[in-house]
Image 1 (spheres, rainbow, N blue to C red):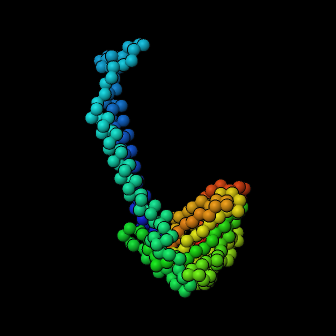
Image 2 (tube, rainbow, N blue to C red):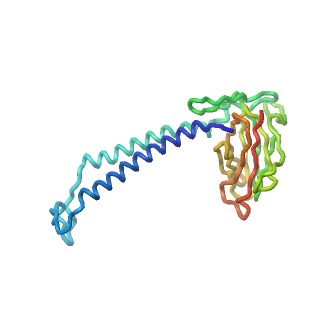
Image 3 (tube, helix red, strand yellow):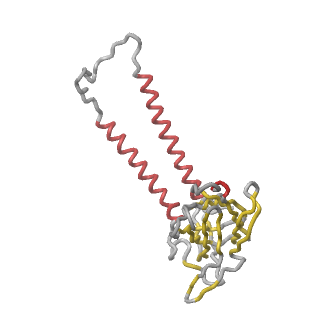
Length: 249
């Protein structure tokens, strides 16, 4: 089961590449200078900084080095920020005509498509599903009151259904069954403390707050099953607060 994995994996690889490069360069520089400029036993080095007890040392700087050490990291930070906008836009795209269009009317399907090159998912429209967190369980609602063009309708069980599922190590847990090729906007709220559903196989999560609705996109692009865990500590049974996502054809 995947969603925008290509997008996030490519970004992860890019950040890791630059982290390794900067780390090797920096620690290589430090090691080189530590070895090259180490004094030998009995050797008296010139006092280039004119160090004297009770006196500030002489300024001994290199403007070119300081400028390079400031400008080059700044350029790298700007570049990494720029490429990070892609997944941010995918996660927080508008619910009013963004990558996933508008709410689906009764009988319409999302027909979402993931671009294999960049990982972006686009949809004709989306369905709304409500998620409620509480100590210590998830509640899924496939049929909230959805008004489109002055009509209220319910999602069919083909598009969304709920139930329970036996999970090894967690026992019987709530489940939500969604259709591959459809895009869902989760409207989430907590009854008590802060929770955060983590859809492990999809690589997405978002905080769920008390008395405040938060949203998260869930484009389903393939079939499979995956765990839903809570990633905000919420009390004694936090570690066993789970759910199951089932994506079907």
